Image (cartoon, rainbow, N blue to C red):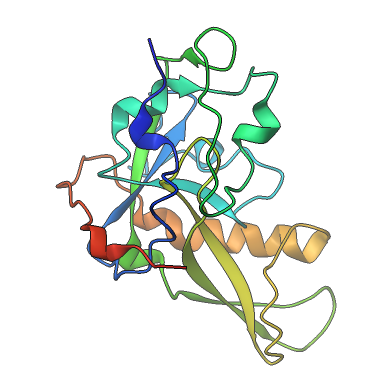
Length: 208
């Protein structure tokens, strides 16, 4: 079995820059049993297992990236770092090899995230004991990797009171509380029912 060529970056394409409000993101989980019976929501432990919490939240653009693509697991590859690294635009990439770079993982669950619901959200937060209230805003960004052109991230940026434009990353206790706040805010938008597939046209890619 070969790795799906449709997932690999194509040097003839660049970043996706079109309007994506009608599209959905797809997130893999380590279990199929992901719904909390009493709330009907995704169980918190399956929303994220990353030390980075809800920051730089890794997803895939559903449609071109299909549910069956989730089974291709590169986590045991000796070139794992390479395959999960950001793709350099216009560069050719190495194709993963079965039983060396990837194996098939069929024991997984998944859920969907409507881009229209999670893009441009504003969440207030405070830094430690500071009385100043800050605000961060979400942005859905195309972040292709060497093994997945359709990789996207939900990122958060401080916008008030200081317009720094620096992405929020985990580094202290206030980021931990902010991550929990973000999780509680967007958890209600996650879906388990498969939405209608919407594909992109070639005009959706930039020329950069």
